[in-house]
Image (cartoon, rainbow, N blue to C red; front, side):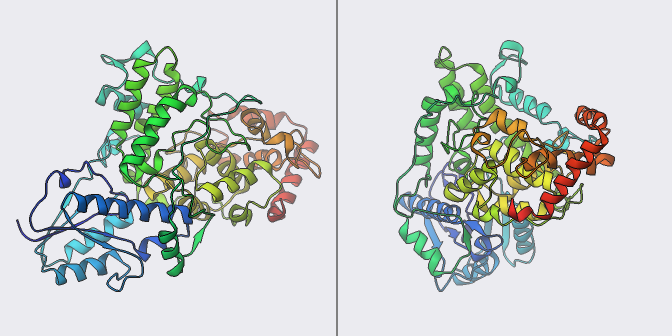
Length: 511
């Protein structure tokens, strides 16, 4: 075999990849901590630490299997800070005759490495990452000729493709989706199970980030780091989820409370997204556990979990590769307002936004409804620039990698794609917030008021949003009810609500 250099990106920590099945002569693996990756947005400090800890653990694992590995840390003299410069240096230094890499998940890295290989004087090859359950362009081909990509259709095709919870060609029980059963508010006195966390000392990695003056956001306790750093810990988290959380996962997956940060969610997205776990093994393990415990775990719990991973996750990746790079520029509603400072501090009188932001700053984590219906809902109603919100979501969450973040942000959350992902904008007034959370009762603002000094901003923003975008949204069959209610409202009342919204928008930093 030619002397070969193989690149492993920070989100390609897949022990089960065919590259590692056996020790091959003349093969060098390289992993790099890169300023190129730490600096393109301001990432959460826990996210940067988590990536570096996992990468270093993976390099150690490969070495234990007798693979030859080069690991570049931040600040090392030989580390030239970018992928291309490091690769050029390593190829020359080690007399490399052949270069290989796995398909990157991000468009920018895919383009960067393709261009690099086109200019190489040695041979090169790209291989699959052997992780996803669908190919890059499977969704694009599945929806060929369609304007809207209906997730439910793709989800059903994935269930059939892998034979998951199926009875022949039909779903078990004859029903595909149990989403309507998974929308319960957390009971007032309900105490959820304590989350499994990994109390590790990551001071060395944390100090390395500080020493190199990496700009980060959020908070960290470096002697008490909670996230998994290798496959073994990730499998422990999976086992904890299926045994302790799955029985109530679906029931309370949309619930929000200021009292607990984790509830019954798996928190496996970081481990899956950097490939310490594969999506197929995760759903297979969960389904196998459910099949043995049907008396204590209803089908609604397991179906909701499976849908998130083989439906939503694979779907979002498919949309990304079908629509990039144009998707990153879409702004259907022409929103351009600056993201308020309290998205970086949590310093706002809106209880729901304060808690969702503060939790994100403290844990680099918020579950999907906190992201969609609190911070995302507020940003959409307030007309925040999708560019600004993109950067915030990409930086603040530990599981945020562009292929999954941007499709959720511009598509599902902000309707900036004009309806490719979501068939309607996901907006709500305080009514939804009160229905699904415990935020409103102790809030400075009054959930029932549309106008006045303490009227909840979500209420006037909600109607202002629909009034402002009537030309683009009124004919949408899924939101006709909102316009019918607005049309019936007294003109003086409508004007009061619109003035209230404009007043709040003019003083958005003071909310």
